[in-house]
Image 1 (cartoon, rainbow, N blue to C red):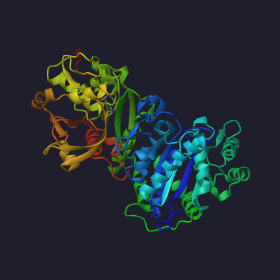
Image 2: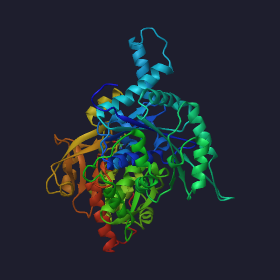
Image 3: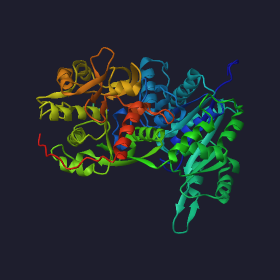
Image 4: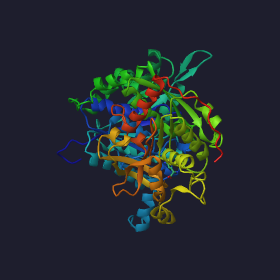
Length: 560
Ligand code: GLN
């Protein structure tokens, strides 16, 4: 190790037995807790699958694809990290075995290995270590927390675990910490918590040369000392380093639970780190103050999320979190009704009225492919006509534009060319540059772009600034050929690209709140700093419910 700067510390977080035990939230929470002790922290996810990134995976396989400022398509855990740490991450925080494999093969083809035989150890593991150390160094942090995707024992994850084993050996004794997160099983028949799956999982981890320093056991019911003592004995971990994490009512309660369990102090002690005063707003009290707002439930925002992947809630994870943040900022909670868009149809407005009868606002989130579009357009048309607050996110903006064209521009066949390539009224279309790109294989507009806001619009009022910087993930765009017609009829481009050409935000002037963004504002919402567009939407949802001015439901039967 070089002299001078103290070398960064590494915390490795692995999971056992099953996925979805809260490894990502534990990782994000520990990051937030270390920040509260004045340490600089960043996070990296190692995903064992062979896709280069999750961008090409179905949301059913993978949940939401989270996009960073620099346009990386990443695992949804990066969303948790960004939200808990209030930090913008980059592509360097998302490493997949697909990327590592592609890199090894590229180096081999270039002749970098000078005729050697390429092997998992050392060639693949060296690249993994390079990526881990590279991020810690470039970010200049005190601590890098590395979460390994999947569970211990998965074939794909072995090279990552081997790289971690090597790093544990190469770094100073107090330079790394291994945390293993596993579930405790509750047997209903005997009302017992079983530790055996965790014991097996730790045994597997040890067989790969990694002895965990800390075990975090997720449980649905309280676990007493006999459980932690048993785990301590069988897994060779001191009892104070076996912590139970009871399922919380909100993920945002987890930092407080882990703090109370002693995780922060234990981490500092094992890594030989001294606490410092925290940055403004980053103390544990600041966090507790914010989470207290979550239990205020006297005001409720009833919101429908109408999308094509609603069976899998994780597909819209950031949308849900952004709603929670905005509602909390207004001392309210959110009650979400999930509605499958392909069960609905624009031609059947009474059915849409019935589906939306119990909500005070609608969000239509992102999505790809034709399925679901007609139902979503129908929902937008209903919100337009019935003055129901509507927020469209990417595809939700596109569908709002289509609905407006069908209803107000006398273009009954208006559509996106994503759904109907030969439509007479392609109000949403692939622009020429996009079409050329698609022939070359790279098509998406990805990552952060500036959005210029038009004065005296709702968007301007909400952002209170001339520019916003927002994240994109889409191919289709508002078709500029129709822009003037829309503006005459009362749908304004209130946000555009810097050159004014691309429509980034569209809003309906004569409506309580009907606004859509071509970007994904949900990716920039943070617990303590909710997003202006979500705040504007929540304000109008609360106004809608509180004036009790419910509009008669039913309405016209359009057959456009
Ligand atoms: N499918 C649409 C497009 O590619 C919308 C994408 C999205 O909602 N993220 O433009």
